[in-house]
Amino acid sequence: MQLEQILNDYQIKKDCRLNNRIVLAPLNIQSSLFDGSVSINDIVFHQQHASKVGMDIVGSAYVSPSGNTDYGSISVADDKKIPGLTQLAKAIHSSGSKAILQLVHAGRMTNGHITQGHPVVAPSAIKATHGNVDTPTELTTEQISDIIDDFAAATRRAIKAGFDGIELHGANTFLIQQFMSPLSNQRQDSFGGSLAKRMKFPIFLVNQVKAVAKQLAPKPFIIGYRMSPEEVEAGGLKIKDNLMLAMVLKEVGIDYLSLSLHQYNQLPLTSDKLQAFSMPDVFRKAVGQSLPLMASGAINSKASLEDVHADLMAVGSKLFVDPMWPEELATGKSHLGAPITGGVPYSNIWPK
Image (cartoon, rainbow, N blue to C red; front, side, top):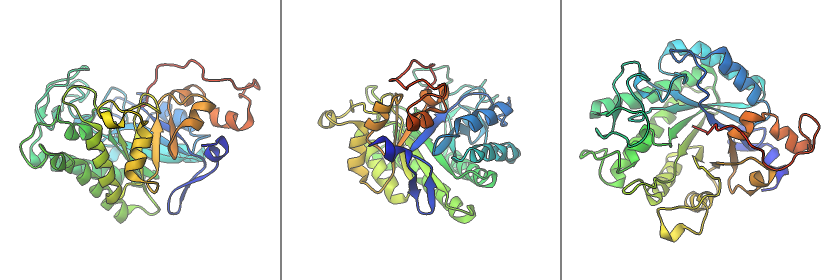
């Protein structure tokens, strides 16, 4: 896609337009207060970094205390957080960007210190093989229903705070992905086993948050879904399963699908038949042209930005270091007046 088209406005859904196609990827900057309340550092960061993008996705807002992914994450787990979230949404809007709140539950990818004593839970009582994590307790069907209600309540709070939408974090091995993965979901009930049963949790979630938005949102409300296309571990989640999920989510009615990638044009590893195609191309073929597709991963130069085969480009590290980058692309000069060169070294900040 040519730079001019990327920098022009984009209609992501009916009656909802973005200033451009560049998105501030969901970064967990871990600057919130000890209880997950929005801090002045959160507000300043997003006010500065939302000024030149079409959409700012606030990363890793946990929907319940047991779902906290890390120290310093933002909480959307109770109504006391609404005033701070309102100020954050206003700060993003003051910069001209749409404000999206990413909703997450860590599932087994956390520990009792981060959850402040709340139980670590997951689809099955299987400890993750990486990270500083605890062995989780298997969720009962009643607890699964409660978590779906937590996401719905978080959506209500996002609407009340003035956000333009929410993104369900179904990537990076957190709870929603854990329900999809045979490695972390070995249940024998209606939420585990076959692909149809493993898809039940994310589909229920999307339907529930859509119902909340339809009832409460006073303006067009964006519902996105972030997905890690596959797991490379033996016995893990294969791309063919997530392609099926993507097609179902399109029919259920999400507004965009975001692919969480290390490299925006990386190739699939869990399908021999698809290894000649980039991840965005594979998912585009599955969902068609009508569902907006977002891609991320090492987008740090004009050449890489134009090379992304997606409707929206989620940029993390480059914008973290240089929030004026979209404007610099338009003018051909850095904010210091020097000509723009290719990609530059940047800090080890990865989208969450």
